[in-house]
Image 1: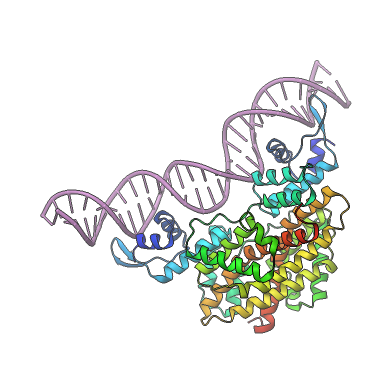
Image 2 (image 1 turned 90 degrees about the vertical axis):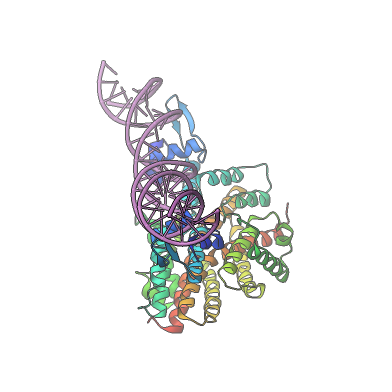
Length: 214
Length: 214
DNA sequence: TTTCCTTGGAGAGCGCCACTATCTCATCAG
DNA sequence: CTGATGAGATAGTGGCGCTCTCCAAGGAAA
């Protein structure tokens, strides 16, 4: 199919598609003439993934390119490939300074991981952007005066572990390697809005049950 | 305290504080002279909340102003006040068109709520931005070819309900009304990064347990 | 063949947004 | 008196996701 058709089928303007091509988010079409290129379903699929990353996931274009580079890197094994792609997703900004809140937060997070027995997470702690994010978020809570210690955090973490078990069970359904890596990225990005929305709906529901709607 | 001290204690530049004052995110200080105003701990506390909303929560300035307006609205009862503040938080953009994916997603979400017995969420569905967000996110999943139906979503929703129960238990610890409303907002905004980070750490952990680190 | 529309490609521009720099003028401390 | 500091207002900056405009070369319709 040509650019115009790709645009029509995806609902993305040709100008934007050209932009994505330029930015390397979408591989170029197969050239079939000096002024024409041919796009296929893989382009359509990739375009939808790109739009999802950017519009739903709020992933900046530069980060999306990095993520997709890992997704396409066939030289890597499955776990590493998915891991690299996920680690390239954007997170909270670094803590500006190693202040008291950050130090306390780090200690609590470390204690939490120990209590949970998440040995891999503990080993990877210095490297993992997720570990850092967690520390930053907990530090913010502390700075606002909410005292969240490992004991309070642990039940949430255990619930998230259950969620992760579901995730991986679902992921294993997909037959090909590439689909599983893509599914890992898509679920990481799309699952957050889903969980977020469910979380707030659950809060509304539970709050209405406890206190009514007044 | 004066502006300079507020700036120093919060780590936010005086220029930025002036900007927040102008934008109405921070109430003006008590004027104690033609060229001086006095700020107190409530300003410091509010400033930290504003920074958290903007930097950690990624809430745009205009939205933050709206949220805070509800937080400060003493004419409302507790549930409505917290609800209004939470509903003012930003979400996924509206679906561009009511296409097949959106229709299917809406049906699945409605079925999910019924299956869960979340009657309040069902009543509020047409109004709730969270319901809409959930539909948009599920529609994206569908558009990407992942068939998530109510049966698959339900376990996640039940887990989120357990999380919400914890949230409200924790919230009840706070003595004053204002603190509880603020805590509701702060936990909605800060809890998402916490859950997100925990979710990804849990995925890494579980994935390493299943497949090793190779 | 001629005419006109479309294509790929590339640069510049736009609109939004969160600041940030600068300026003015009034104070107030030493 | 003087120099620093404060409040207030305006204009500017930098990043980002597009979007506009132009161009030369095809390719299709008459």
